[in-house]
Length: 244
Image 1 (cartoon, rainbow, N blue to C red):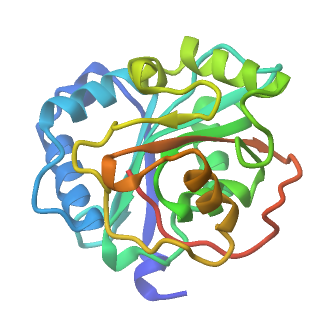
Image 2: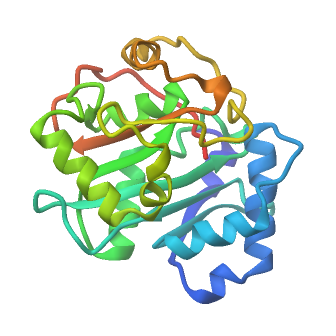
């Protein structure tokens, strides 16, 4: 473990109205976004504030003597899905210097955010184009729709729950194919971030995108939901990296 990684830790708090209007927090998120995704354009301030307003928890990856190295924004409704709480990854990004340092391990994030909210999570999800995000989720359980289709009984319950209880999904409902989980054209930038595709361990993810005509360059993405502890076809390959 590097000395930088030893000094980095997530600092979490429940989101308040003060956070939504906090210009320093918004500027920190913009700076991390530019660095982590290798982009010259900012994530617009209004969109960051809206994301914070709709979410439950925000975290900054604090580094001693330096600017924060990452941010993470999560939603967790009071309602449960099949009796288990859901943690939704609204956005997460880590500066490039901290990629591959395993600061976005779902098991760690679920534990830390669960401690803040006083709950244990049975579901963990988000939307993505990035195969590394699929690998992260598959580390903790079976992943819908890769292992279990959204057309199944369980899948239909999951989609219904997300549309009713997760603001990010509700707001993108018109772009969502409820059968496949495809979110069509949600990123104006097209492909969001610089990351490798066709990586080892994410073959099922890439096949799913191809088979359902989900195109990164067009700005499409895929809903992914992991059932914590459920059996995954992925195995235990190691993963690094994140996306927003």
